[in-house]
Image (cartoon, rainbow over all chains, first blue to last red; front, side):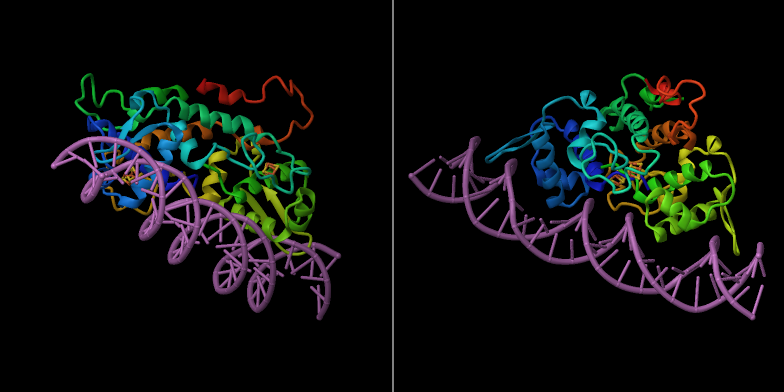
Amino acid sequence: MLRLSKLTDYAVVVLTRLEEGEGVQAAPDLAAATGIAEPTVAKVLKILAHAGLVEGLRGARGGYRLTRPIAEMPLTEVITAIDGPIALTACVDSAVGHCEAEDLCPVRGRWDPVNRAIRDALSGITIADLAPPRAAPVAPPARPAAPLAATA
Amino acid sequence: MLRLSKLTDYAVVVLTRLEEGEGVQAAPDLAAATGIAEPTVAKVLKILAHAGLVEGLRGARGGYRLTRPIAEMPLTEVITAIDGPIALTACVDSAVGHCEAEDLCPVRGRWDPVNRAIRDALSGITIADLAPPRAAPVAPPARPAAPLAATA
DNA sequence: GCAATCCGGACCGGAAAGGTCCGGATTAGC
DNA sequence: GCTAATCCGGACCTTTCCGGTCCGGATTGC
Ligand code: SF4
Ligand code: SF4
């Protein structure tokens, strides 16, 4: 169904929750706050830390902390970090495996523009756009999808 | 990897191949022409016929035929026919299953604009855009992604 | 009547995702 | 220095879904 993995979804949720708390937050803490199982949250955090989106502070009183404000985190970065590069089919540039019908296939390589279109549409969205309207400083319901209007 | 299913990919390939041949074409014929396994092609054709994108003529000398020119077939229709409705997460309108963290989740419902953005980006693409440049009447390499430029 | 072809469904296997767990390393606090 | 808390890296299993195959039945042209 062109669905992105649950882990990616959870990652966004965790990131938004990280933005709310000020200091470092432990994994079990975030798990309780989001309603996701604790080991799963830990796994997501580990992947995100590996991608450089969050920073893990070890030792007692440790936890995780954002390395950037979520307003400067494109959604594509999170997807790429967890699900790998965006590749609709096996014959786009970022794909690894190749299909066996690639010689006879008449549309070989023609997926690239489509792939790029989706990537562009997603790169204009940041995690902040997915986050809940915190204090609503400007206009909460007026621009829920401002950067998305470019497609229309 | 935000990858659409192979069946959908095959469907596009078969559709483009259907456009090339004039009359009806049998499933084994298409299989040989595309390099895809015959039962798989048959399965794809069945699904497409069920969705109304192609028409199956039974009996001897039968086969499949397009109901519309591929230039008027949006890509979303093919995806929806095979992979089901486009739903990035479990909490968008078109999704069936619901995640258990939907009450505590702060981004619940915020995926909808993203989902819509992708759907819009895809609805502007037709199968003809994926098809190979048949006779190249205008300019083959000049406009490979004309309808996609709206996102930039 | 016969052969060719689509139609609908059931069926199975393998891969991938989701989820869980443990031992080790690191650091704050006492 | 010792203990407790916490991240880190990986291995592990379990389940689900996708890709692929197959068969009996219905329909039509010759
Ligand atoms: S070569 Fe053709 S069949 Fe293979 S992945 Fe690309 S579009 Fe699909
Ligand atoms: S409610 Fe939250 S966790 Fe559940 S599918 Fe929606 S965004 Fe993801």
